[in-house]
Image 1 (tube, rainbow, N blue to C red):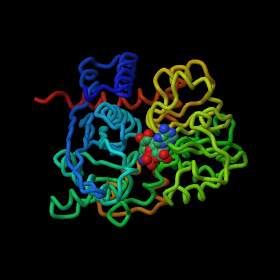
Image 2 (spheres, rainbow, N blue to C red; image 1 turned 120 degrees about the horizontal axis):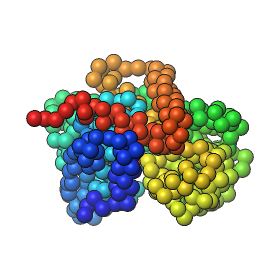
Image 3 (spheres, rainbow, N blue to C red; image 1 turned 90 degrees about the horizontal axis):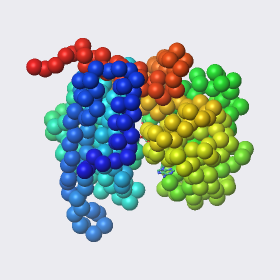
Length: 418
Ligand code: NAD
């Protein structure tokens, strides 16, 4: 019942479809078709405004432990459920498989509205949640990272809570931390920057160039704003960006740094007065070269997919298209799709770099991080394109196939215990 979720059903159905196409071993399919470990916790937090105590629901799901420790973000959002977290954990497994990282997928979250909570409440919630999932996480077992609604500060509180229980600092228990407590150069930027590294490879094959491209970005948080900065830096014209309050639009290109400062001052994009305003639906329908959904899942559906007028769709968010919308796009349109499992893989890749650096207590320069990130994403992009054209299948299926194949092979190699 807790697991009932459209995203979970769609993610499992997608896996079964791929498994059939790949003629995977039935035992492996059954094993990978459900998460290995799922934890639901409820815990109290004293709220600052009136001293009342509120009970929150939290989750941590580890999809498969075959490849090494599990890895995946922590989401704070009012609609987090076990089903959503389980789906995202499964997607993380395929993503790590495709990128060749030594991890299985995991995900966690707390059903809460972080925007309505003050810093003390967020800290109390984070510390108590971390304590509740403490026995599931460790640098060898499962390593959380930021996702929607969480940031480097939340990761620092998680790291501190875990370290207090151990009696010594354990930076490798989470990634996406501030640099001062063992974070890496380039992690905050990694996902948005990675989207742009993949785009650079992709648009060249389409006869486009980034400086000549127009861009619309749905979601102006970590992923969307950094993708905007990186694209503007390369000369692209970012004409529209949005948050949950709506979109801002400027035909000649938006001042991305100014908009980041506007958001950082606690104001929403609807309150920005130096541009035209659109709804999120109107943003998705803009005639642009590149559209980057970088907010929530299932924003592009059967109902609005026919409105899309972009040439390239780079999925910064996880599962921004429903399966029905993805089928329509892949079957009926000429839009080049860069699927989530590939396009937003920069985050987990640099999280991997952070973990490696923490384990070795030896830190790299930002140039080194970016060079290695580009190498991994470019190689994944080329393998996806090669598989897609050899098998005459869409990029999404090719990417999933490569990810699933690696995990399935590892499962068969390890065999059964006992
Ligand atoms: P974030 O919380 O930093 O930003 C989310 C943004 O989306 C905010 O601007 C918010 O206002 C906006 N938003 C929320 N609901 C919206 C709606 N209905 N319409 C338009 N905008 C809306 O989150 P993030 O870390 O940038 O994550 C965004 C997406 O990218 C998520 O799907 C996440 O799973 C995925 N992702 C994030 C990372 C990462 O490293 N942060 C890595 C891989 C994938």
